[in-house]
Length: 189
Image 1: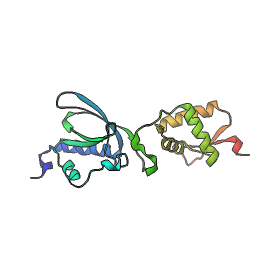
Image 2 (image 1 turned 90 degrees about the vertical axis):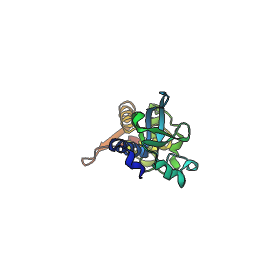
Image 3 (image 1 turned 30 degrees about the vertical axis):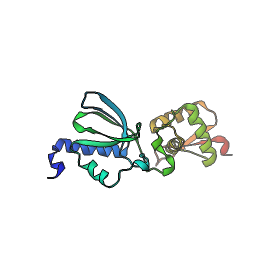
Image 4 (image 1 turned 135 degrees about the vertical axis):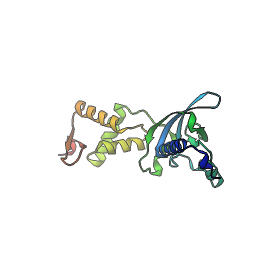
């Protein structure tokens, strides 16, 4: 008998949706253990975030797909594989979604630095001196490479603040584009 036949359609659908979220990046999962204790974990099924030494091999992969109602995940804090039952899941929130990742990013360390105005200003100035202009998307990617927890909305907000407070920063918008190209006036001599 196929193991998935014993999973109710609702649980099977929920299990697949959770696994899809886990494949996207870093997910906060909050679930109750059998003893009633609540676990709050940073989890993933994205192999770009899991150290290669911990990738499942052969029989481990097969066994992981046959657990009825259970979702196996990699606990990013503890650095080990764990599981929870779909019926005991309380929350599932995507915290960080990876774009196609280059191996050099090493996001699996999860030692992100808090993004501050000063950090953004320093990186923005370095990037614009090297590239002559920047966009918030490009700046966000550079900040992530440098280990900062950078989200697009926060980077855009800080860039707007920097534009308003710092002398020399300018931008132009193209009618066909919905973003700004920032540059420093001193570079446009």
